[in-house]
Image (spheres, rainbow, N blue to C red):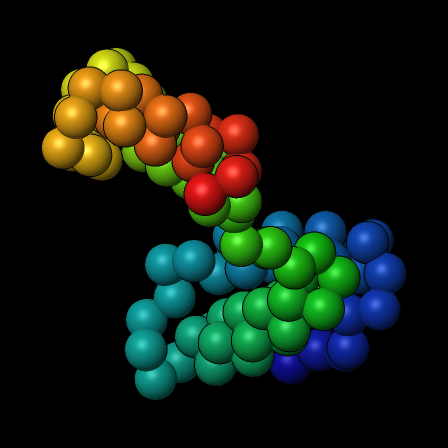
Length: 98
């Protein structure tokens, strides 16, 4: 088993290619062991070099609404008891003021 640390983008690319080659390895085989070790090394490299930051809360709400195919008017109904406060509540959230 020829495994080395992942330090560069080229190392990362090579490790991903090897993982893909070993994808269907059977547990308990040397190929599966290599697959597990490489997957762990890639995970550590990616967490260190390309962290996934949490989304902006407002953008997350907008994305979720878009995914659910809902309009802002529907969303505003659940934010306040009166029509004016509903509109202002939604505007405040979507402009990062609330």
